[in-house]
Length: 82
Image 1 (tube, one colour):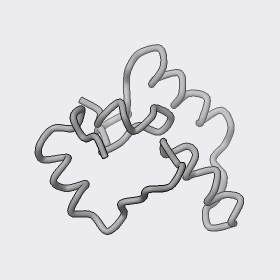
Image 2: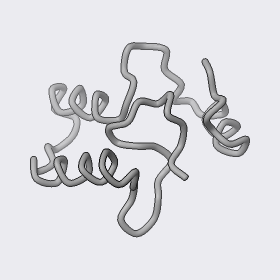
Image 3: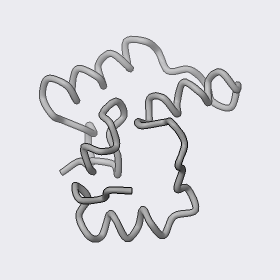
């Protein structure tokens, strides 16, 4: 797994996680859709998803008050939000 775009702390935290997957999911949105289909998560309103995607795509922005450790729509190969 290429972690070049993650800073050292994020990469260490990521690699130390029990949640390392080697499947086909490449962003949180794909994981979110699977959780919805498996009825393990309640669906977010479509307008919320659209706003998150707009922020990430058009403004390279992630997080309203604080950034999290991952993007919602961007591919994991983009690295962690800065």
